[in-house]
Image (tube, rainbow, N blue to C red; front, side, top):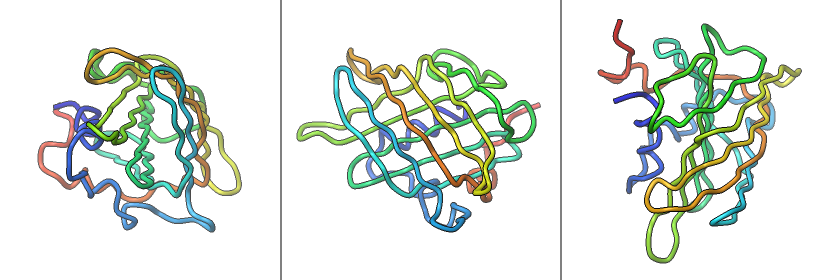
Length: 177
């Protein structure tokens, strides 16, 4: 299963895959990394909270995720080699294979009747460097995982100092040669 599909399962399953979201998976900087996102379209919402960040050197991906209450939002940046500044075009991880350089986003939240999940099908992430680490601005068009509908999501992540990747130590997560 491609890495992003495992990541999107995080947003579909109950209980959540805690490994990616544990505070220990996050290398903290003063004030900690934060992620802010808002979306409009077939649904409307927002999240602004502390984020977890991880650099997975085996899979060569930078993961940024945030959970607040029953809302979760995450993005993955796929650099060619190491996390670096630049623009990363988004792709649909449910249809496309990993594009390098590239990015993907996913979101999920609970309604009174079900869990709603979305994943990117287009957009971009722009990564810059600051005194607090890396920062990312993103905008995605995200399609519903079940049924019809889409949202336009935009936001930013700041204070990104990637920590270790808990998934790199899980069998079957490394890319095959």
